[in-house]
Length: 184
Ligand SMILES: CC(C)(COP(=O)(O)OP(=O)(O)OC[C@H]1O[C@@H](n2cnc3c(N)ncnc32)[C@H](O)[C@@H]1OP(=O)(O)O)[C@@H](O)C(=O)NCCC(=O)NCCS
Image (cartoon, rainbow, N blue to C red; front, side):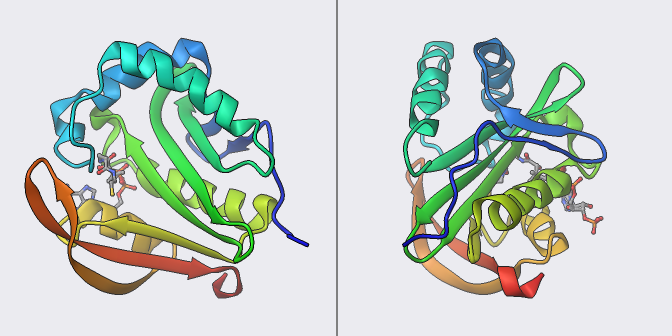
């Protein structure tokens, strides 16, 4: 018997933004955010997404969200009506009650605490609603802002994996952070 719950729809409010399910109206601002060179430089994708790819993937993610158990939560971060970011919680294992978080904020919103807020909301979702025991995150050791976000939400640095990521022809080390339900 698994204790992991499928939560839908998700709506979580922080001090500055709300995390909610993505809808079709998010496609254009989501593409603009992901295609911004300042964002693309920091993410682990190999290619810039096209508008058509984002238009296709949003309904595919909606279908995925209907799975039982729900395998992933790919959520819009909005300030009022404006999409300012995206946060993801992937349920890696229901048996082991383990998941992983990720986040992207629009470059013109960086440095205002939103990354920390979105990561904190994802952990609330993971522990208080989905019922996970352990949540992990992976970033590059030189990604100071992302490492700081993870530390600020209470995640612990567990170790570096050498040449763990091949991104646009370059090998990168990765650093793993994690937090347990019992750490909170
Ligand atoms: C990483 C990212 C989410 C940070 O979001 P943010 O909203 O700027 O983060 P916050 O404002 O909550 O800042 C968190 C901490 O990082 C620090 N920080 C932010 N940008 C920084 C930078 N460029 N260099 C050093 N520290 C930085 C902040 O000062 C803060 O620490 P402090 O409170 O000790 O001062 C954002 O830069 C982003 O979306 N980048 C592109 C996508 C990405 O890299 N995602 C993660 C992939 S692993």
